[in-house]
Image 1 (cartoon, rainbow, N blue to C red):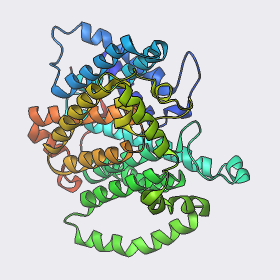
Image 2: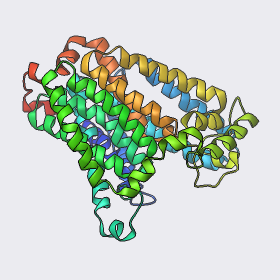
Image 3: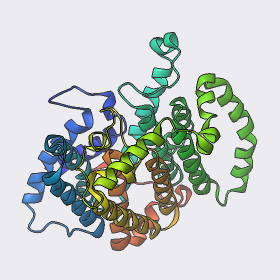
Image 4: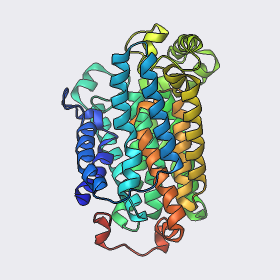
Length: 408
């Protein structure tokens, strides 16, 4: 049963980036939800047959505390039906933090999870490129492009978060095919991210690429010179390939930052702040941002901190801030390329959280889970972790048995 649970966990992680592109509707939901339910069903017997589960660390404890606080908010929610539905969604999203730490035990397992994440990002990037070249998109002359069923801003965020993880695999994975596949993700994901015309996505991509450059180019002067020589023709190629409408939208970033409405976000934030002031300590309940702020049902907070304040008040923001501090501390305590990649991913997350409500994303909690796992491995097997994520040229190729399920 443990092998089945491990395989389902890898499938779940693989499906997260492109989950909304395969949605069967109620009662099944999207592909990640379906796999997640199977994963829970397979993991429960594994937990029950153990005499003692693994102890809960600080990160998992804070995730649990935040979820329990949201549950308490249901008692004073302005719409309990909506809040209960949101609590179910939060459970399905947050549970990955516990499942990853329970099922993954070794640095090899962490590597396999990173491979599954980047592979899912590949699917999302290819689906976005396919949408760009689709007959419908060409006929309608779309302004923004995204994989079917996905929001362009979400697509850009997912692709950007995958960049430092792909760079990590490209630098450290012992299998050459995986390294080349991971490095190939970088230009493909960048082009797909640009096609979304997401201004926040572009800023996040720049942060991600800076981290990737530190990871891949540090101590490699010959490669640095090669990259510098290829940047001008690569820039010209992007200028030609990316539609003018996309480039025009991206070029408005300075204007929007100097005094624009940030695509009506300023008005949404003002309404959300008024809603927070009416219930500053305990909030209005998860899922009730638009109702509390008097906005249209299709609107979102477009800011993670504000979404938490309206949902659960200062208590929710405090718990989330402490959780973020522990996650950053855990990532910073790592060494070498693994620290560079995960800290860069957190920087990308911080940028995107300013203009999106990322607390409701499975990818957010997957990132927390990966860092929690890396932190536990750093405490238990630091030498093995460092050797597993050293420069690929300095490591030996792992046997094919590395693809097997983790040992109990």
